[in-house]
Length: 600
Ligand code: ADP
Ligand code: MG
Image (cartoon, rainbow, N blue to C red; front, side, top):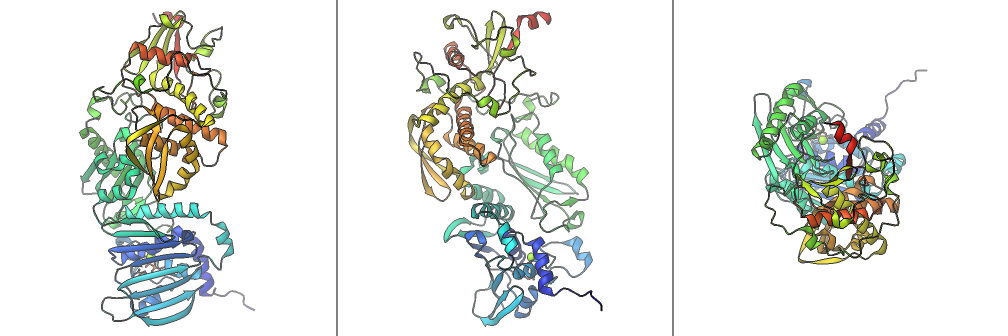
C-alpha cells in the first residue's frame, strides 16, 4: 500500500501559521500591513486581552469583492504578485499570500468587506480553516477583520504566550514600527475599551513626536537633527538625536522602502559618526528612512524576520556615515572636537556651553548641614553587587596605592584643605603622599547616593513643591513599571499622580534634585529598573538610589567654589565608600609622589 499523501489544507495551514503567526503581535502586523497595502487612510485597531480574545483591524481601504474575499483565505492567494519577476519589484508589504490562510487556521475570523463600487458587502466567517458563514451585508467601504480566540485550537501555542503585559509590549513594538513609517495614515488603537493612541495623519517628524509623547522630550521635533542625502544609489532621510540626549534606552529605527528593518552594519555607521560625542554607555536615538529601487534590496526572507539584504551595503555605509557626521557638524559640535583621538574626547555635558548663571548647587542642597555630615550607610555591600574589580585594577585607586590602607579619602584636617578645580570637571587635592584627582560629578553623586539609600529605607524624602507641575508621559508600554516603583519614588520625595494612561502629574520633587530636571531623573530611574527586570528588592533600591543620585549630582562643566569643593570632599570623606561608583566607575585616583617623580 502506498503511504505518501498530501496533507489536508487545514493541517498545512496550521503548520504555516506556526511560522507566520507566533503571537498576537504578529497577527496584528499582518492585518495592519494588509490594510496599508489596501491604501487605507485610517486604520483602527481594537484589542481585548492583549489580542487573545479579540484582535480587530478596521480600515477604509479598497475592500474586496465576494470572490476575492473567499479566495484571500486560501494559501498562496495574493493580489500582489503574479510571477517570480514581481518579487524583485515589490511595492507592497505583503506578497506571500500566507497571512490570512494562517490566521484563519488558528482562530475564528469574521470579515466584513465592501468595495466602493459595490452596494452590498460580504460577510464571511471562518474558523479553523472552515467557512462557517457567508452572506451579503451592509457595511462601510473597506475591510473589517475580527480575529477571535487566537490559537483556540493550538493549546501548545496558547500556553507559549506570555502575560498580557508582555504581549501588549510586543504589540506596541510592532505598532511603533508601523506607525512611524506611515505618518500619512491615521491610526487609532483601542485596548480594553480605552483609546490608547489616536495618531493623526501628518509628517514623519510630527508622527515621532505624537507617538513618543511628552515622555521623551529629547524626541520633540526641536530636539531632532534632520539628515538628508539623495544619491543615485539611495535616498536617505531622517532624524538623529542630539548627542547630549543620548541615553541607555534610545529609540533606534531604520526603515527601508516603508518597511521596518534591523541593520547592525548601518547601525555601526551611525555609531562611528557619533564617536567621541557620547559618554558612558549611552547611544543616540535615530529614525532613518532609506528609499531605493526595490530590485536593489531583498526582503524575500522569512516573514517574521526584520533583516533586509542590500546589494550595495558597502557603498551605502560611507554615505550614511558622512551624512550623519555632517549633520552633527552643522549642529555645531564636531568642529570643536578632534576626531583623531577616537574615544578619548571628553564631551561636555549638557549645559556646559551655557553661561553659568545657575546658582551654585549648595544653595539648593537643602539637606546639607555642615554640623551633621551624613552618616555612612548601614548598607555598604553594594560594591560586590555590581561586580566591581575589587583588587588590583588599572587605576591607582587609593586603597591599593599605599602600603598603609587609609580609611579616609584624604588625611588633611579639613580646614587646611585647599582643593583646585581642573577643566570644570575634576577636583585636584594635593596630599602629603601625592596628588589626588577626584571626579566632581561622581563624587557628588556618591554623596547623594548614600542619602537616597537612606531615604528609600526611612521613607522620608524631603519634598520640594513644584510651582508649575510637570507632566511625565511614560507611554502605556512602561506604565506598569512606573506603578511597580511608585512607592520608591514617593520615598525619594517625588509627588506623582496618574493622570491618564501612561501619563503622570509631578507636583513635587526630591529636594536634593536642586536644579536638575525631574523628568530626566525619573526617566533615568525608569530605565535603570526596566533594564534589569525582576531583581531582589535590595538591588532594586540600589539601582533607583544610584539613578536618582547620578541625575541630581552637579554636572561636569560647572565651576565650583573652594567652599563647594570642600563640602563635597568632607562629605565624601565621612563615607566608607568613595573609590568607585556602584557601577564600577572610578571616583578618585591618587597619583603617588613616586609616580610623579618617576615622570621627571
Ligand atoms: P498577502 O498580503 O501576502 O497578499 P494575505 O494572506 O495577507 O497575503 O492576504 C491575501 C489577499 O487578501 C491580499 O493579497 C489582498 O488582495 C487581500 N486582502 C487582505 N486584507 C485586505 C484588506 N484589509 N483590504 C483589501 N484586501 C485585502
Ligand atoms: Mg498580507
